[in-house]
Length: 94
Image 1 (cartoon, one colour):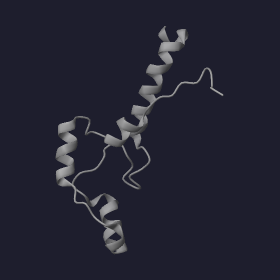
Image 2 (cartoon, helix red, strand yellow; image 1 turned 90 degrees about the vertical axis):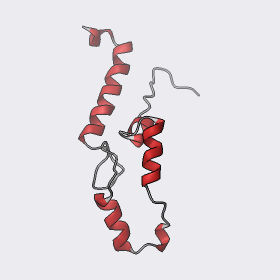
Image 3 (cartoon, one colour; image 1 turned 60 degrees about the horizontal axis):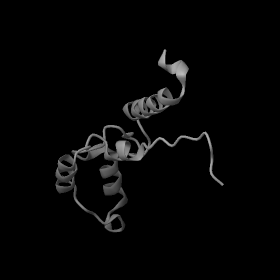
Image 4 (cartoon, one colour; image 1 turned 60 degrees about the vertical axis):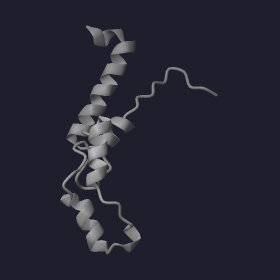
């Protein structure tokens, strides 16, 4: 059964790629990122790495957990939602 009057707003790519929106910038980031096996890592090393100690991080995600959006990330989500709403709701165009 399909849902009518439902709008999907894709945020994953925008937030997951962060400031690395071009193929060139993502390739550069991959070169700088070390592939690791977290099961071989001591808990302290993993915590240090995830605690914002790396040289590159996603500026749209929380430094606390590297998963939830931060203020910039929520701003992106708000702008995407607003753009979608403007297409369908006449009162937003005024």
